[in-house]
Length: 163
Image 1 (cartoon, rainbow, N blue to C red):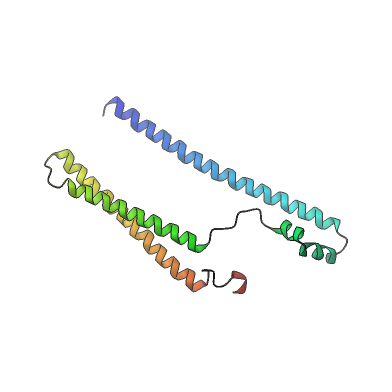
Image 2: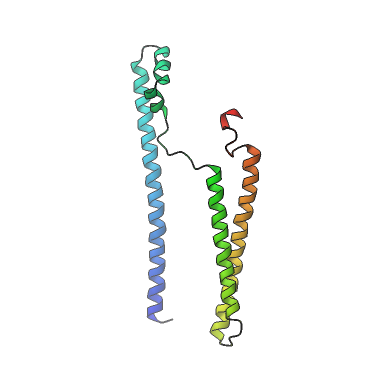
């Protein structure tokens, strides 16, 4: 391995680490901001409840639009099970076709007698097997999830509060 290849591999590893660390930092910042906003909202509700004289006044206020808005969670609503299911199916389909593309490239190299081409074909077959296994696994998970969503009534036909 020459110096150029070593530097390229090192830079690739460093940039990959920076990318993963940045993504994790971003997710932690988002989580901390959401937790702080929930804490501030809880403190505001506590101060507001202290200002009312009776529980009846609190209940009357909470029935108004401002009261309902105060009780709303600042977190964005969670993604519906259907959207999550579609994302898993899409990911499984894309991964499956990437695996098939690797097999097609390996098949293209089948007649070459060069050692590098043979090694490349074997690596492509390995990657193809790996990607097809992941794609099929994602599709199986999506199928099982769809069965569970229907069985548990999370597909939008019933609300969770009615169960």
